[in-house]
Length: 469
Image (cartoon, rainbow, N blue to C red):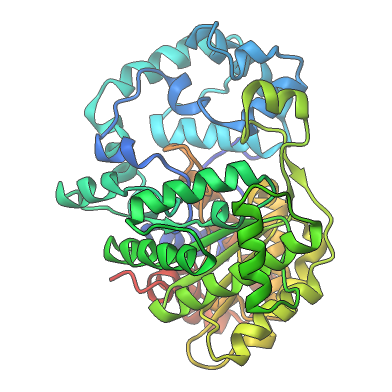
């Protein structure tokens, strides 16, 4: 019987262990999509408690706690203490067995704090106090934790109206780890509520210095901010969409739709889809002009629980996997850009695993030989960034594409303790390849190539693909 979370965790064969310990484990981390708070990095934030760094903003844990019968005041409320919140999490942890939270929790305790005890009510106070003592030390600050996990680059997620002041402060401070912005223009195409869209456009006008009265003005302002992001080191865009939009439209129609929504009139579903279709193409063209990579995270149904949305707001654990028939729209969207010769490097992340084979075959339609893996099947994300989700994504990509050209894992997290997700991914990758070698499905005589393949997927592919020098 193996010990829980020992050095060979998830590694059942000798080749898997060699691939992980001698190759994957030593590679730096390029976290090319995350939701870290840039201000915390700029100010080298020192966390006041384990609750702040571990439970603050972690909707994964909040969902589990609610499911375990924990009241909301211990999740998102302000009326309970940090210790009370942590105590409720510790009471929940034993019930998360076989949920990825159980592995993540103990990996994070082990790798960040050197704690190998099992978290449960009986150990909660001891673990809490030990971690709090360590969090007072400089090496456990925001920057200290990034160093501890051998992070080389992080790409945050930023709105076009963001000043990027904290990115500049971090860069000018001489911090050796790169923190780069990512262009996330979702609000610029969110025309469902005219008053909200109008306010956003007014903010965009203010930060860009361009008066916006027409659709052409809107695009000019967005281009201004796109240039500003590029000046501040941006290399990627990201779009969080429910589905892909590829309706037919004319320039005149889009200008009329903008005038209508900017004037406060609600749009029809068809008008909304046309506007989003036009904006996605324009964003794609902007990214192509600068050689950026465009990312698409699609397939979530957000804010399902209206009562809780009104109480605690978005991104608090009330989102789920959606079912959308996106294949034709995705194909049409990519083909429009490709036909114009303006399809930039692209990463597609699907939330519903039902679409794995569709995505894995779709990316093959638009590879053009210009660079390896120009169009990528993104890693399992959100509900899929656990062992089975990652295995499914890796196996599907292997069967229908080139796993060897994959750009690897990311955290997609707000937490400075989430970097073990890279370790989790690398162990899973090495286990799959090691098992194939053990079973004679891959040649042991090609071990040197496979070793390099593991290092590439863990690090080098992303470094080359995103041109992080």
